[in-house]
Length: 131
Image 1 (cartoon, rainbow, N blue to C red):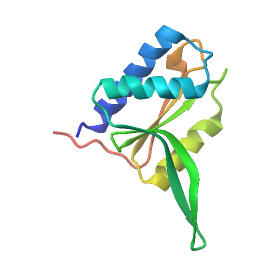
Image 2 (image 1 turned 90 degrees about the vertical axis):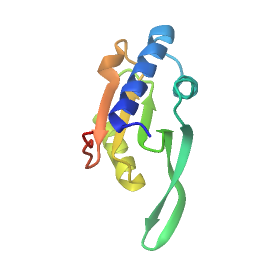
Image 3 (image 1 turned 180 degrees about the horizontal axis):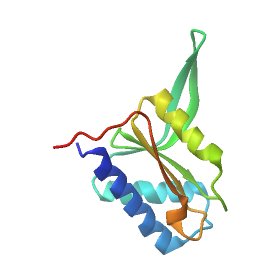
Image 4 (image 1 turned 120 degrees about the vertical axis):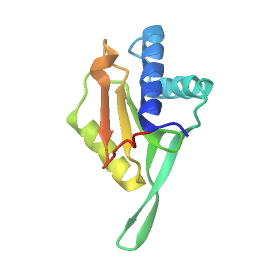
């Protein structure tokens, strides 16, 4: 299993490659499919639209939310394709990390002219173990 920082580096590199080829403007689902293809080609295990249950007052709400991509069962990736980043996007990803119990997530907004402006790393009590 790769360290989380290596996985996130691969995810960002894959997103840059896709954005350079296709640019902004496609639907989010198209980028989701392209990311899955690119990351699988790099040897990662990618789950699309991973549904997550939430327990509230003892009641399990099945499929309360879905994660766009889960990479190597470690990194949650939330994809957007809109003209600007909104603060709620990072908050949404942080909530997913907490509820799903994962340490790191990436918000990637393909809708911006410069992809670097659309990438945000969100952590949930994460510390990389030094080897």
